[in-house]
Structure formats: C-alpha cells, structure tokens
Length: 127
Image 1 (cartoon, helix red, strand yellow):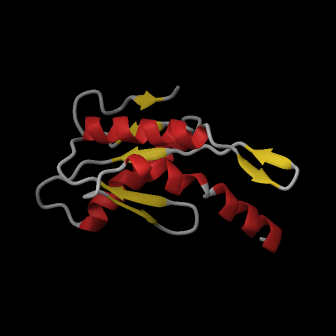
Image 2 (tube, rainbow, N blue to C red; image 1 turned 90 degrees about the horizontal axis):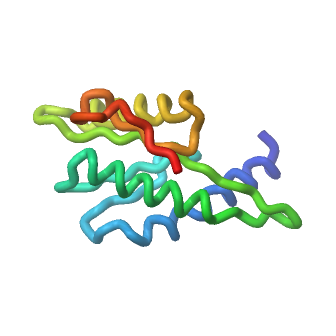
C-alpha cells in the first residue's frame, strides 16, 4: 500500500468519532485494527445494539470525506453479537466479526446480527 492510499484510508475513518457522539458514557468505542472499530455496549440487548449500529451507519454514510478536490463516500458494515453467559471476550468478538463479514458479503453498508442473537437476528438492516 502506498503512503497516499494509507493516508486516504485514515481520512475515511474520520467520520467515526463524530458518529460516536451519540454513544453513552458507559459505552466503549475504540479502533480495533486498521479499519475496524469495536463498540462495547453494557446493559444493551442485541436489538438495541442493532438500532444504535444502524444510526451510526447512517451518520457515517451521510458524512463524505474530503480528499483534495474529491469527496469520498464512506460506508460502514456492522456485525452485532450479544454476550452469552460464559462467553470469553474472544468468543464474543469472533461472533461479531462473523456477522460483520456476513454484512460485507450481503452487499456492505448494513448491519447484521449474530445468527443466535435472538428472534429475527438473521435480518440485515439497510436504508
């Protein structure tokens, strides 16, 4: 990857902090690798987490990034997984990661829930 591509990729992450302005003080939002982010939402069920993810997805999609004379449309795909009794952090993160990759396979710019996160969890949200 060239330095220009790396700089552009970093610029594309710029909408994320602003989009996260709506998270609660007890929530944790961190960059998790190059272009991945992790949200930990205590005391939040899968439906509430999916609703927040959809709101964040829309905020990012509505915030193009200026890159010189060009405007770059940015999209984000979310995978949502709910903690299950006995889950390790790694197991929970892996289920969320699998749901995120399913969102990417299903067309990107959407929210997918972990297959076992509850009723209707296989649905994908896109607006």
